[in-house]
Length: 179
Image 1: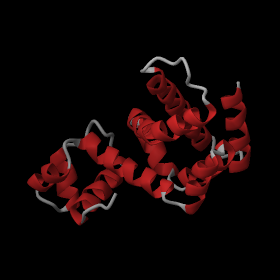
Image 2 (image 1 turned 45 degrees about the horizontal axis):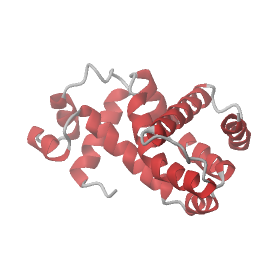
Image 3 (image 1 turned 30 degrees about the vertical axis):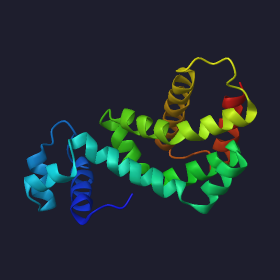
Image 4 (image 1 turned 135 degrees about the horizontal axis):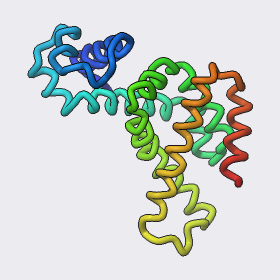
């Protein structure tokens, strides 16, 4: 996802303000004032304050998905490889993830993870034939379950100062999925 200059200014403004203020206390006027853009520019680019975060998260996930390692891991259907890349990538965005969590906005991250994971899990389930007999909505719930779990594991790991290595987290994630 390619962002426009105005979108970048507004995203950077919001992220900077979140370092000092809660998400709830911030108004669109305050965000645009900090970004030095007109209020109507905000509404040309975003639907709401939450939309700023959603679009930023989508760009992060797109950036993650476009790495060569992620592309190879998806092709090989290697959970271990994907987890290694996942934890390495999002460790670099620790402050942002923790800001989301602090502001009770982690559900936005979970939703975006679910949208990213749904086609991947669907492909994997089709390859292994493990979805035979599933109802139409089963995959949606399955994906939501894994996206929320993955997101919460990431948050706990980041809150714990990334004590475990990315490799240890990948091994742990593999254990969880096999249970």
